[in-house]
Length: 507
Image 1 (cartoon, one colour):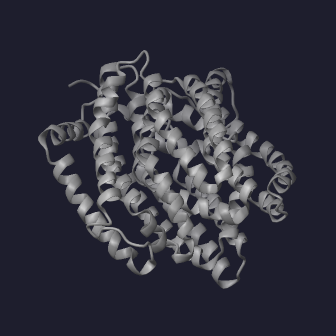
Image 2 (cartoon, one colour):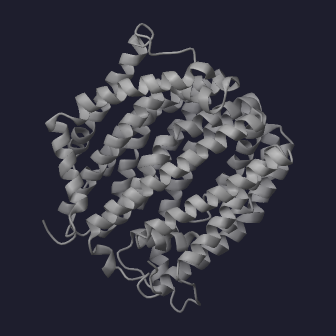
Image 3 (spheres, helix red, strand yellow):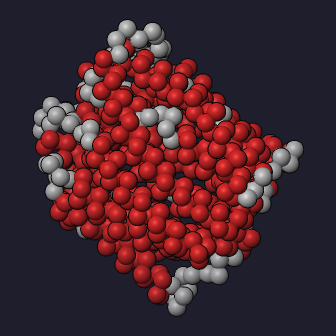
């Protein structure tokens, strides 16, 4: 249901039926993400058969340069609009114009990185790709505040509709260019630009808010300070997310990078499917509860347990079926990606769990502390990648997995300081799911071949083995994790919290 221009900035309606709003948002987000996931699967499977690993590697090289600059386009100002208890029209208008100005300022700056990327990767085709992909930066910046307001107002259906619709348009353009006109790697670039443009247009159409001339910049200054710290943490996350691509491309070329990026895209599926959508609805909810520490802590732990309950099984399935998933989605020629995915997937559950620390810090406005932690973690991970890249993409994958297991408990300890949460609370909440992950993965690794649950990764056997492995895993997980009362009891209590229409006002 559309909101008026006044109510879109009001915070009063955000605390009515907060638990149910969040629960319905989670359901909508998960359902939409499932559709997006299926769409992405089909797109990746088709494009992997239409294009070569070099094509994906070239776009990944160019994206490393554009993402490096583009991470500053938002300046964290979207999260300001989402996180703040109260915002006014002047503040949001100011943030919009800052977003837009920075986006257009970064466009020529990104173009200046094109020769650097060409020299770094020793690949002349990257030059023009950077020039084209950079256009997405100001396009995305133009819709940043509209998207933030949709999230703030928990308009989940509208938001997910834009996400899915823009992806479908982008994928359609990419497939048409690759299949019908054989544009090779340019089809991937066209899909990216189309998705960005359609997404921004959709956000403007669905949000009634429009920017106007800013009369008072006073409130915007403190908001920008928060945003800069949050943006700093996003930049260091970029180092985490892109330095591996840069180093693999620099050391081994676009072919090896193509194998790595295809594996990494599958590695990110559980984060994209479950924890990402849940995080997008939990952070606004926790932000509304930041003045009620007890309820904030209780809601936080409930959301953490529910997220792990849904994600742990996905993590297990991807880890034990890594080779088969790659063979099924990309085909037999991508077996090297299967090996890389198998290594990366060993850190899936810790990569997902690391986000919980971010939930805590962002929702209470401690963006600076998140920035400080991300600086140290990114520096350490980059050093690990730099050492491991001599063994190629597989070595970098090993470095990612090891550092992920180290960083997650450290971030939990850091994020729970001076809050109602204790580090022991997070460990207790996560322990059953980590234990289940380790035990089931070990069972398949050590006993799989002897009981006939593993395959050679060929496309012929991949589908059948995935079904068999998944069936056995789901049965084991259901019996030993979900069914026992000591696990299922807390789960039901967590679910009831999100169905409580008065979660904001009392027990």
